[in-house]
Length: 527
Image 1 (cartoon, rainbow, N blue to C red):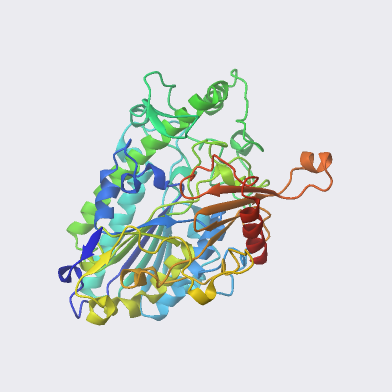
Image 2 (tube, rainbow, N blue to C red):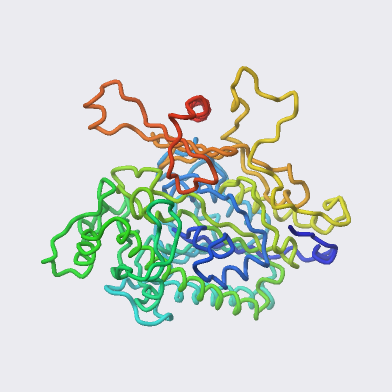
């Protein structure tokens, strides 16, 4: 429970400040202390969360990075996204900010992001592709990691912007930075990976428990069962792509131990382990990378605070896609760019926090469903919305209590809106436009989503998911083998009780057939 007091409101007349957005690929909520992880210390992230508004139910709406960027940057619905190299018609957040007098910048260590066609050249003052040396083996020290170098470059860039702003360029700035994170080279030192060897995943419950005899941590630098980020659809599969291409099913690629490649030898070792040890080996390596991320994030925050960069700035930190830890499906993402992945092998719940100037909303956590389009709307409305935070009319009460149960996941229907004839989900609106998340500080019911739709890639994807109230429905196309056995086979439907069964372990579609049918109808109607 959190009481927002008068002292936490921005002072009247506070200068409208700068905006920094940082997205990290494959950053899982379940591994962060602020989201309840007790088996891993993340003091850097947790300290930032204590200064911010934390969103418990932020979901990626696509498993494809290009589609996600269009949702983040243009506020587009996953049910409307179609794969294309052409810039979409919707106005980008960069254009919105530039029209309002902001200088706009895009930085990333992923070429697909830095040069994304979703951002028109005229809308972005400058784009930067962060230098990235792809190692052949884990590095030895923290300052050699990609996270350290990326944060160092971002901090240097922000300090330069801040200095220029004080001297001769008073215009505010809007910076979007994206780090490829765990979707690219796993260069984390082995020492940091091995410190987590006592953590295992219980195959019966999915819980993380302690055990003495653990397998050696995953030691390769290629993401487990994920294609390298450089091998995009446009670039094609070049230079060693066949060696790192993901398998088409949930089983790891089996390679011969006689191979001279350290990466292939590690894959062979991993493939020889049983399911639990294989999962544990990768989880340890992921946690090693998380400790690197957390340490470098803390250093980055300390440095930019010393230069007062965050004093008047809105800072948003979000994950883009999570990395599956192998329960109950595969490790990473089974499938490659030619074969869509199964939803059960993706973590679609990712972190989101908003740090506001003057400590507004610090330590508040909100459980309402939200998605990338909502972050787009929040940033879009910020220049006009920020002054409202300093008015008594916005807060409505002298003190405002934000309960952990505020804005429960269900949609808020009035008595006249109650469904009839057993159609419990007739009022769902999966295609609702993005909403300003900050209105939740003043009105618990003001921006509550009734559902979130997730697609594998774009609007043409057969694989979809619908999150609503206490349910998660997933659909997947039939395989060629299934169609050969039954020509009349239909798309598979899985139903899970959410959020209790967040790891999607117990499919209850057969036992709750009516609920599954109604959600499937609502999902089909959103296409």
